Structures are given as C-alpha cells and as structure tokens.
Image 1 (cartoon, rainbow, N blue to C red):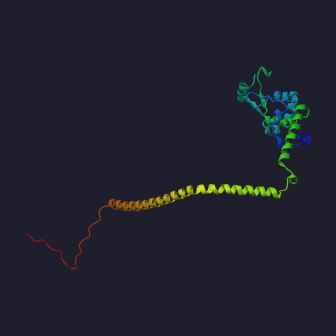
Image 2 (image 1 turned 120 degrees about the vertical axis):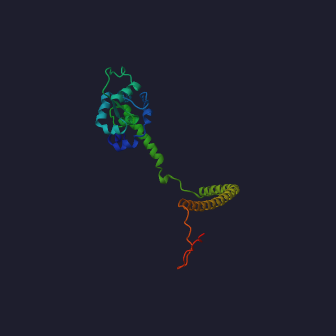
Image 3 (image 1 turned 90 degrees about the horizontal axis):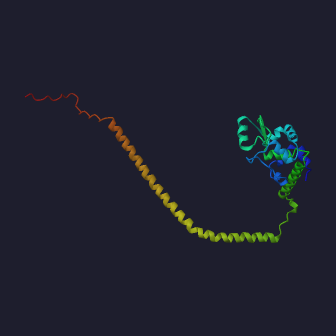
Length: 242
C-alpha cells in the first residue's frame, strides 16, 4: 500500500479516489445540514477536530481543487433562502447576518481530509481510503500466474455441460416448431391481402385519373360541331320563293 503522504502531495492520486465518500462515515459519523447535502466551515472543523482557521487555510491554498469538488459560496437572496431553511442564525453567532456563506459537500470534505495534515481524523480517513483502494485493486488485478491451468477433468466437465444445454435446447425447438409454422401462415395470408389491397388501390387511382380528365373536359365547354363538306364550285341551294 502506498504511504498516506502520497495523497497529501499528488492531486492526481486524490482525484482517483475522490468518489469514495463512504469512508468518511466509516471513520467518524458526519453530521450534515437539514438539506442532507452540505456542511459549513464550522461543521467541517468539528468533524476533523481542528480550528476553523485550519480549514480556511486549506480552502485558500486549494480553492480551485475544492471548488471542482463541490465547495461554493452563497450570497444575497440565495443565502437568505438557504438560511431560512437550514440555519439558525442565533446558533451560528451572526446576529447581524452575513455577507456570504461557504458550503461543502461530501466530496469536498473528503478532499480536505486528503489535504489536512494536523488532524488525526484526516489521517485516519487517508489510511482507510488507501486500504479500501488497495483491496479493490487486488480484487480486480488477479495475477495471471495465480489462475489455475485448465485440466482434462475441468474441460470434460465443461463439455458435458455444453452437451446437456444443447440437449435441453432440442425439445424447446420442437415445441416452437408449430408456433413458428402458424406465424409463417399468418404472414403469408397477410402478404396476399396486401397484394389485393395494392391492386384495388391501383384500379382506384386509374379511375380517379379518368374522372379528373372528364371534369377538365366539362369545364372547358362543349366542342364545336364540324361544318359540312362542300364541293368546290358548287353554289349553295336557294330556298323556293312562295
């Protein structure tokens, strides 16, 4: 297991284990605000059994890292709404109110535990965190040479298991045969119905085209009658005068 000092020095190492917030309650019960998500600077200091200034010093030196893991400040109307729901001003010793309030999440507290040197609680969190990480890595990374080589007996057992599974599949396929046959027949009848429907639709389309042509002819008016043919040089007949 690497020494717990590696967490104090390496942000990459801290980032790799920052999600294991459950170790906080394994070491010491963590009390949260009524919203169930946040704590104040005073509550963080109480958890690690240090003064407020120790927490504020960590916050100043690692502000960006802590912000990336949930630390944020409330001001103005957001602060007023949060205080009404989660804080008792008289207990926080701010009778005149405050300009801002810094809040921390579980990830932020674990982040502080990996940065706070002068705290036995923080040191216990780091040790427990590395133990958990080492155990998880040992379960995942099983040495290849430690895996037993397959034997003839184990291979024969696997082959028997496969044959048994195939034997169970045969009856199931036979039972499915009639069902598949009925489904296939229904699909064939459906295809025939679709073909008949397509033929009806085509006939209706042709009929509609003919009707549209008739309508256009009616709208254009009656056609003029052809004139009778007259032989060149002939004269028109005159009526008999009575």
